[in-house]
Structure formats: C-alpha cells, structure tokens
Amino acid sequence: MALPAQAPKVQVSSNGLEATMTFKIPDGKNEVPSFTAAQLLGFLNNANVTFGIDQDMLKKLADSPIYGRAVKVAEGNAQQQGTPGYYEYTFDTKFNRTPTIRPDGTADYMSIKTIETVKAGDVIAIYHPAVQGSRGMSVRGQILEPKPVRDLPPLIGRGFDRSRDNLTYTAKLDGKIEVNQGKILISPVHEISGDVGIETGNIKFNGDVIVHGGVHDGAVIDAAGNVIIHGLIEDCDIHAGKDLFLLSGVKGNEKTMIDCGGSITAQFVEYAIINCAGNITADYFFKSKISCDGMIQLNGNNASIIGGFVSAVQGIEVNDIGNSFGTITNVSVGVDLERSAEFDMLAKKIEALNSNVLKIKKGIEDFDKIGAERGINYKEDPRRMQLLRVRIRDEAIVQEETKRLAKMKEVIVAGKDASIKVYRRIYAGANIAIDDHHVTINDNHERVEITKTPEGVKLTKITGVKGTGNQ
Image 1 (tube, rainbow, N blue to C red):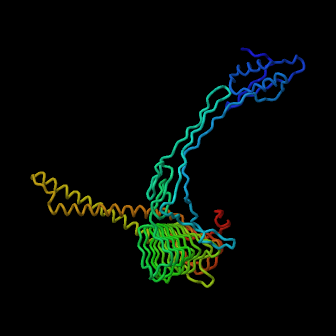
Image 2: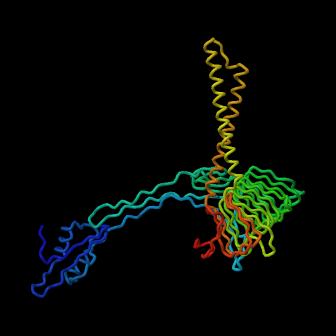
Image 3: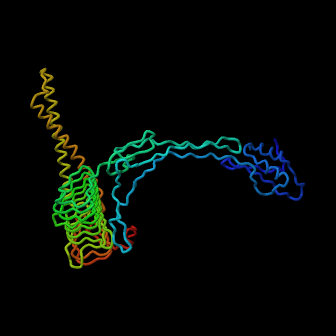
C-alpha cells in the first residue's frame, strides 16, 4: 500500500524492541495533514509493527502531532537471559605467595598465605544450578529466544563427599584443600603446633608439613609436598618435594642443609646450604652456599648477598652484593662448565645404554631364531633369561635418565641470557660469573646490570626503577 507523502516515518530499533514515529515538520506551503489514530495504527501495521503498540500515544498524536522528533509508539518485551550453573567455593583458591612490602621498605613475610586447610565435615562448595531465561517478543511479533545456559558437571577430585542432590560438597577428612586443573583435592597435612626437635623427633611425611614453631636440635623434616615453617630454622636438615616457606628465616650453622624440589620463600638465610629446583625469594643471604635452577629475587631494603657462594641459572635481582668491609662474595648466573659437562656425560650414558639394549635385543632374537631352526624352546634358557633381565633393567634406566636429561635441557635453555641486576651497589671484592665468564670487581659500582658479551662480563648502568623493567 502506497503511503501518503506526508505520512509519518516509522522506525524500528536494531534489537526490534522499540518502534518510533516521526512527523515531518510542516513546510508552511502545503496544508498540514491530519491523521486519525486508526490511520496511524495502519502506518505501523504497514511497517509490520504489530506488538506492544501504545494505543494511548497514537490517540495523543492524532490529536496533537509532535513534529520533527521520534516518539516511541510501540515497545516489545526483551528476553530475560538465564544464569549458567556455577560453583561457590567456601575456601580461598588463590594465595599471596610473595611478601608485602611495608611502608618502611621491609618485607612482611608473615603476610604470605601458603595453603588452605579444612576440617572433616566442612562445606567446601555449593552448586547453584543453571536458571533458564524467558522468551521475549519484538514489536514485529517475532519471538526473541534467550541464549541457552548449561549446568556444570559435578566436581571431581578426592577427599570430599557430594550430597544426593549434587548441590553441597563437604570434606571427608582434615587436610589441605586446593583446586588443581579443575579438580578439588583434599590431602592429609602433618601439622605441628610447636617446635620440631628432640621432643618430636624427625618427621617423614608423604604430603604437606606445617610447623607453627621452629626447627632445632639437628632435626630432619622430609616431606613429599610443601613445607611451611613459621618459626626460626636453626640446626636441621629439610627436604621439601614441592615448595618451601621459611617465614621467620634461617640461622644455620654452616651444616644446615635445605633441599627443595619447588620454589623457596624465606625471610632471610644465614650460614646455610641450599639446593633449589625452582625460584628463591628472600630478604637477604649471609655467608651461605645457595644453588638455584630458577631465579633469585631479594626484596626490601635489606635485599643483599654478603659472603658465601650464590648461583641462580635464570638470573639474580638484588640491591647490594658484598659490603664495605670487602667481604668476599661469589655470585654466578647462567650455566657453568660443570653443568654443561654433566649434561654431555648424561647424554653419552644414555647413548651407550641404548646401544647395549639393541645388542641385547639382537642376542634374544638369535636365541629365538636358533630355537625355531632346531625345534627347541629357549624361552626358559638361563642365558636368554639373563639377557632379558638386563634389557628390562637398562630400558628402565634409559627411561628415567632421558627424563632427567630433558629436565636438565630445560634448565640450560632457561639460563640463556641470564643477568645480575644490582639496584643499589656492588662492592669491591665480589667475584662474578656468567656461564664460563668470570670477573672480580675491584671498585664499587652503583645500579648496574651485569651481562655476558663475546668480549666478557659487561656492567651496564640501570636507569629505570626496580621492578618496572625500564632499564
């Protein structure tokens, strides 16, 4: 149907939920047209607007048109979006594993949160089922479907029970709770309320260990998981299969041994021997022997290395190295010749083992071939059985050593381009090594990054602010 020349313009919003009508401004030359409410309704229908029409507004516009401005004359119903199913956890899933820096510049290691524990019967998660949305209707009568929402599958993991309606999850045992790759895991924790020493004896535990006191008297802690110690570490040996948190620091006796399969966070380290497969974060090191496959970052005003031997494959960040008394301090980063030689020796060992396995396989095949030719079953022959035992043994060794070689390669690759960043001062008397390059510092230097170049060790001035990466 053709519309009159002066018919109002009907427009529908892009989402289909609103229709407007605009009357043309009279030009003063022609007679101003008038339209009844029924005619205005016809204009809407002609534009396929059939739902949510404001009949009262059409009557008002018929009586008193509004010129040159869009007036809403129809409104649809928006679809109501649903809510997907979700889990509400009643425990912390993320922790602050680095110390906060106080206003005076010192590091607050007691601010670190390492693990979350629960008691048997505690509610650990509540499931909120999906709520489907509701349909809407456009002003053109089109059904507006909400986006479908889904329920989540039940939680998986170990150490907890699920209610019959699958809505409430409760802990089955006392222990540590964590979310790991979408699974909730509750595992036993060995918790000591006081000190570890003569009274408690040594501790060996296939999980996490929490000590609320210190560790003294030559005690040994051997844990497969994380170890968290709130008090002071003195004369002791500690092995942690995962991460180690020494929240009050270490005062060793030059025999205190610490071995960690993960990363270490310590307030300070004095007179201790440390081997760490991950990173180390601490306040300062004093006359200690420290080896780290990751990176060492020392925090706070006291961030310093004084005396001892400190090495980190991936690099070191520190305020000061050495002191004004000229204390000999040995610091190295990158991959030294000893580690490279160890890698080469292991690669040759694996090659030799593989060659031997091939020879053994050939020997077993020869036994089987001769047996087939003579019609004799040699499978129980002692010589063949011995070859089979050696093959199985060597194949197992190759598998384990290959894993170790791959790990060593990862460490070596990570040490490429390692540097030492000194944000305050490196003192005369420090011995620096980067890979196989060595230098003794004869003068004090302020704010430098130490790197390796084809010509040797190079000191470059740091111009940025610590932690900003602007150097």
